[in-house]
Image (cartoon, rainbow, N blue to C red; front, top):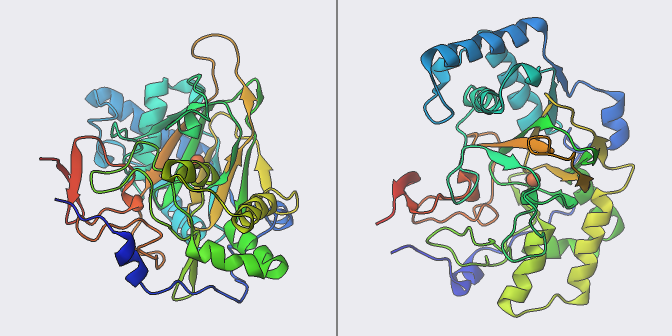
Length: 367
Ligand SMILES: [Fe+2]
């Protein structure tokens, strides 16, 4: 039997205090800041490309696949240290993002690029499951599904995705192929969105600290309900302000509960979306094949515009998505993380594969 946090218990949790002062650390950036200082660009040198090339040759020699490869099969003698320096120093604790550029994806098969993405991540932290099938990497491409249909996730469509955060602590998004038209990525600082809300509409802030229900879109774990209780959008623990936001999951949660949004809630959510999308706040970037965006899911929102694919199989826009679970870089609110105290699972662990559960924080086959 698994424990479900009931509403009565939720009410017993301490009230989430609303932060009333702006955040002034490096995570509070604007578009002008990151255009003026491009240290977020992580250009692969010929030496680092050679290290990846050698590591792929090693995988081929050993006959490894995505499922059978281990970190030691993919050695990165000097790139691993630089990747960790950037993830820890800039993605986890600084501005909250980096763009790694210059992987010659045309040299490799799609399956090999997937192994490179996984291998890079393994030098930093464990990767977690992307969906109920337990996939190590998410394949983000248009599967011809309707974004408004029940339990469809945005990455399966060519629809515009509004600013949101993912599961896992850090997101890695590698561009394999870009679209014929559109598909522009953008990121926004969640910290700047918070500071703007505080400056312009502080009366709405308590709603975000109280939170909203999230639709789990058919990928709930065995111990969860189809729709979550209210989970904070912003939560602060010992000065660390963290974010969790997916408008589409919030939007479809209420109808499943037979509830409606009140006008102030809609005003708050619309205002949040509009601030994140302000031209002076968000930083658009076209990810080219071989670019990999690394994003801190607690401080940075990401989005993409809608797009049109090239004709023909194998030519569609295709991104590979990695979620990493990284220990100890910030203090997090268990309620915001959907933490289940009985099993130890939280959204940092990704989406539980069907037929599996967790006990004491470890993945196990369900009984
Ligand atoms: Fe996403």
